Length: 166
Image 1 (tube, rainbow, N blue to C red):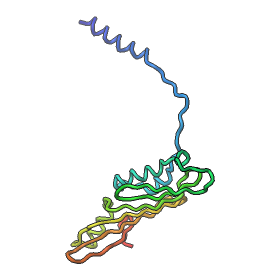
Image 2: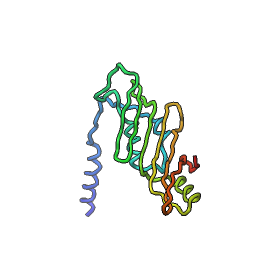
Image 3: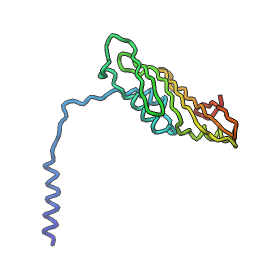
């Protein structure tokens, strides 16, 4: 009984010795607009917002179809059904600024809690999330415009990402 176990054990150990070694000729790492991602990132952002912002950060301007070295600034629009981002890149592909607008996204807890506390009998019926990013700023300006309804009454309120009313 010991012999078959030893044979299997030796076979397993020896197979490790003959493993393949693969060498890569060249690995190219694409620079990501990480300052943008740090400025707009929030743990409570909706997944569809995060996905589109990641596409903006990873966009490769120099390998796009309409890149031409003659222009200093390029404007690219990214769409999803519930929102869009207009991004401005310099001729090197660095993200300069964005204007973002999304409809009916999941509100962060700080925003929804502030609304419920100030307007307890009102229902949230819609929202617009806006983001403005400018290169050089460590944070992006984020704003929520929320539509509220209470019976026949309707109103809109504006809040920042921390739940402060504007």
